[in-house]
Image (cartoon, rainbow, N blue to C red; front, side, top):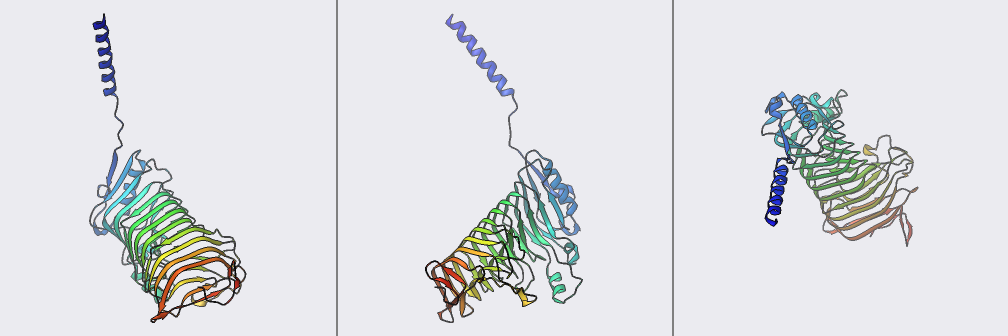
Length: 399
């Protein structure tokens, strides 16, 4: 009897094993899409924008993770838009080993706002690759005061997107901004290089606005405007190990252009290096009434090498001094810490805090600041800074 029961149990176990092994195995396969298969030409002559768009559509339609591969070569690509509204895949990687180029004719890209536009995407990564927008022809047009010049295109933008990664990318000679993060959440930018001439107009390296939880780490930025510009509505931004120069430094603002405006809060800028820049760490706002604000900002462990204005708050911002507003800024600046800032200033006043008489800066704290000018200690100037113990400082050194 015991032997019979054992035989039944063994047979049952064998049957269940057979049934289990016949079930389909769940795989986490990744679909691969090579742009060459969709007609892209790596010769730098034939426009491959349609091939890139088709590869995106195929990846977007996949229910699995997808990789769009761009092999070595030079790909001429006109402006292209990647929309994620109907995407099934929530994990799409652009793996780029090649160079994407614009045309020497600035109208090729300049007729659109953005060259590579990602809109409403989720889980998209751009890994590697070089983007050469051929910006000098448009810069020359603007320098000639030719009124027919287009505004120019941003090289890469992410709009209303989440879980975005950009890593190992080179952006060269953008017509306008290099990378824009607008109305996004959870963005990581790592190990990138941005290169443009120091006199190139409006070529901000990375611009962030109306976005939350953004990280920028390990970047080298050489450009003709702000290396990183931080616009209204930015919250929880972490910047670390960025080298800037040439350029206008790392700037919060400009703010206060509009009366109703979202504030900037929870920003940390750490272990940055500035070489020959116009500014180092800057907060700037127009002298207009505004609902905007800046609060909980930490500028930590920065090195300055021959920087014109290493630390600056400018609440009377007006580039070129043309049609400047005559009011006082309503942007409230509160709880800003400068700590561990060292190096050399190209001007005698290395620290210049020019705050609003209507909305004085509050809780501005400085610790371990060591800046020199021409082999002597640099000077500082604070205007309209409200200190907890001392009251309003109208004209006084900052530390």
